[in-house]
Image (tube, rainbow, N blue to C red; front, side, top):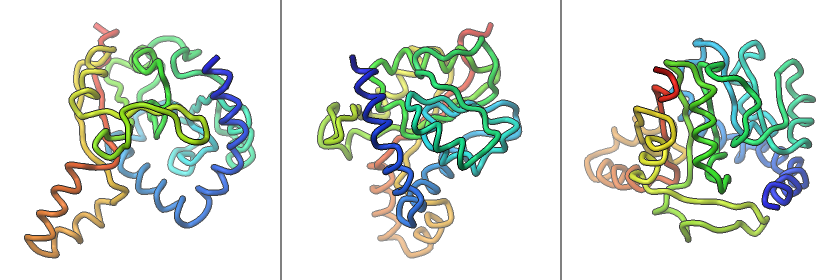
Length: 227
């Protein structure tokens, strides 16, 4: 039931989401968000799986030769195909990836895992399809910045927020040997360096801001499925 409801919501809102992200504010937020995740990975290591690729906001950073995207929204994939001809996409769920084991060098999940009730299954599937030295980079809502631990947005889309400890345990319990957690506030590295030049007091404020980041970023490596 959840999957059918989520698919319908995603299909109904696909054009609206794409229009918003195409505007200056949405594009700025998304670019910094994606930049923060891409810093965790290497785009020249082989095939990249974009889990929850949506309408293709990540496509402009990844060549079509190495990109494979999956999403549950057919409308989102149709929009992606119009904007980025040649990029491979598949209509699929993150918890049931239609790929054989150890195919991808890298996996990316931008604001995706937090919307999957069966998130443990999705993490296990990501570990399964990654190569021995593969890496998964993802971001999720930080619990300190959310009104509730779990719930639904007015649009009907499910969400869940995590603490750093919870997120680390989730990945270690579901297929990965090494996990690193960091924080994101829609600030680029250039913006962070500028802030740090502005004095000790502001730097102290910045440290608190980073600790209470809007998003947690997880970088997970060494899938356990490979001995």
